[in-house]
Image 1 (cartoon, rainbow, N blue to C red):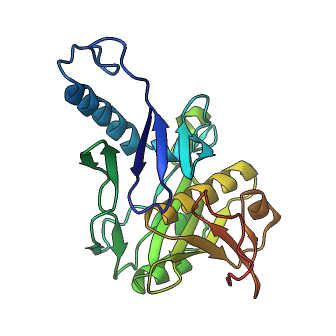
Image 2 (cartoon, rainbow, N blue to C red):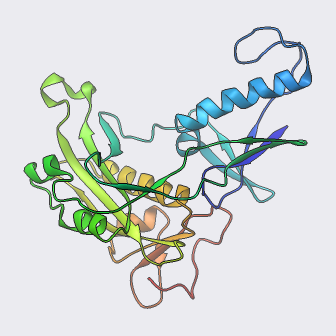
Length: 261
């Protein structure tokens, strides 16, 4: 069967295949279950854990009947080998909560609430990303976005332990995106930067995860003035008036000739 759900504010309607039980036991823990409801609750708990650890981001995708069907089989890691990508910590920045997400699990008459509320960022931000600045990267734009309460996400990429202990924690790139409109339907990719010598697939991964962050925040499209051929390979298309645009919904057409970046 297909379990249909929404994830946070992502505009896509997702689905994942779940095998019907052949024995009265959990497919997750192997423990006995005594009813269909208990089995369904067990499935929901398993998928909730997988979602919280990046199921939507790491899965392969196939469009079927208007759903985005997720498949984790042989799916590549969201971060390139030897590198890790995470949000830039904003512990010293005031965070303002936004309304709870629309995420839900739907099985017959039962609805399971999922996901955790996202946050929008407000000032001050004078020292945010100081380690990035020390590594020679320009943090002016994301800091200004924090001050203007427009920041959607600020991601950083660093060398992980597979590259040797002497390189662990070495930051080699970052990306930032902001709200383009007050309705929070459009996100602008403001900045993507990797240090010289870093593989291009690291930059691609930064952009992909920025798009994921935008979608999970509720954006219907991502626009940018960064006209790079590599962005075309990631699904961005020219927009009237210049720049590029990308729909966050996988069931939408790949480009919108009336969109303006």
